[in-house]
Length: 384
Image 1 (cartoon, helix red, strand yellow):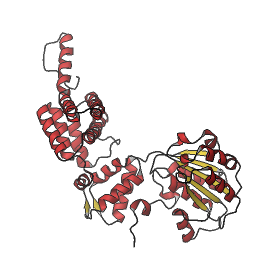
Image 2 (spheres, helix red, strand yellow; image 1 turned 45 degrees about the horizontal axis):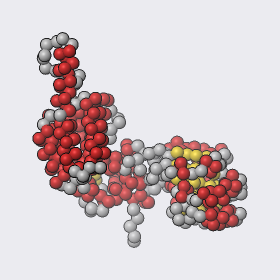
Image 3 (cartoon, helix red, strand yellow; image 1 turned 90 degrees about the vertical axis):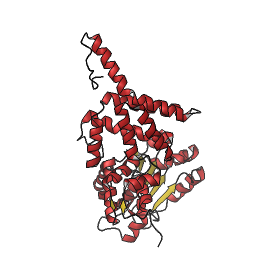
Image 4 (cartoon, one colour; image 1 turned 60 degrees about the horizontal axis):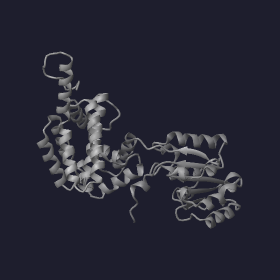
C-alpha cells in the first residue's frame, strides 16, 4: 500500500483532538449546540496551524444528524475532501469570475445527505477582485442550506467587503510545548524512540506549524533508525553541530577571539552557511538570555533536563544585558553579510567583536568605578 505521511495520518478527527486551537474548537462546537451558526466564516493564520482541518471538522459536525452519528464512510469522505456535500475549492487554481459564477449556480441545489452544503475555499486571497465581487451578494444572503468557510494565510488580501460578511477566527501559531507533546505521542504510536532534545528541536524548527514539524519528523523517520537523535537531525538537515556552537559561545565567555575563530572555521568546514550559523547562534544566545533573565526553571524554554542544566551553567557566565547586545551584533552582521562581496570577512569580524563583548564590559565597569572615585580594584563584570 502507498505510504501516507504523518501530517495526514495524525490529523485531528474531532474537536477534542485539536491541538493548539482549543478556544476556536470550543466556540464552534458551542455555536452548533446553541443553534447560532453563521452563514460564513473566515479562518486566518499561518500555514500548518489547522485551518483546513478545523473547517472539515466544523463541516462534519454541521452535517452530523442530531439523532445519531455519521457513518465512517461519510466522515472519512469529509475529512479527506471528497464528500459531495462538503465542497473544497482551491482558490489558487480556481480564482476567476467564471469559477465564482459556477459556485453560485450550484448553491441552489440542496445537499445530497446532510442538512448543509458547505463550501470550503482554501487560500481564498487568491481570488481575483471580480471573483470576490461576484461572491458578495451570495455570501451575504446565501440559501439556508449553504455555509461558507474561507481559509487564508494572508488576511490582508481579503477585501473588507468579504470580511464584513464573515465571522473571523484568527488561528495562533501552535506553542512549541504542544507540538513537542504531540510529536512524542506520534513517535510512541510509530513504535520508535527519540531523544527528548530531538523532539524539542523539531518542535522549535516547526516555527508554530504542526504540519511543518510532522513533515520534518517524517523525514527523520525515513532514515530508518530505531532511535531518533539530535545527531541524526543535524546530519539530515545540515544543521550546525550543537556541541561546536556551545564551544563557540564558551569562547565568547572566555574572551578568547582566537578560539572563537577556530570554532567558527570548524563549523563552516562542515558545510554550515554564514546565514545559518548566525541564525543558530542567535537562537542559542536567546536561550541564554531567557535563562539569565528568568532563571533556570523558566517555562519559556523547551529544554530537556541535562540540556537545561548545561545551558543554565553557560548562561551564568553572562548577564542579560550583554546577551541582548550579542544578539543585536549577530543580527547586524547577518544583514551586512547578505550584501557583502566578502561575507566571511564580515562574519569573522563579528565573531571577534562578540568575543570582546565581555572585555569591553570590563572596561566600561572600570571607567565607571574610577569616575566614582573608588580605588581601581577588579571590576564587577556583571555590573558592566
